Image (tube, rainbow, N blue to C red; front, side):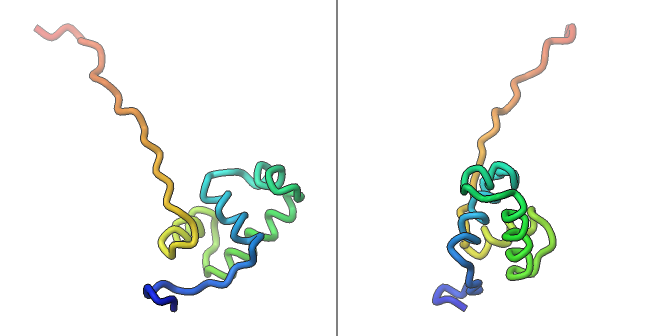
Amino acid sequence: MTANGQLFVPLTPRQEQVLELLGAGLTARAIARRLGISPRTVTKHQEQLYRRLGTSDRLTTVLLAQRLGLIPVRYEVLPVPGPGPDLGRC
């Protein structure tokens, strides 16, 4: 455990990079291009992350990593739809 009570999960610098980009919503192919590695290597890093974090899929991995403070929580503000068209109210 860390001083603030969070679980300590040792990750390599490359795993941290891959995890950060997963959290940003990038695909394996996009991560590979960004880091200059093959998509297969990205997939291997994902598998290692799943093992270290005890998860089995991308979403659970990202959510857990956010909860543990390993990556920032990203908020996307979506536009609120306005009222629909007036459908002939009297």
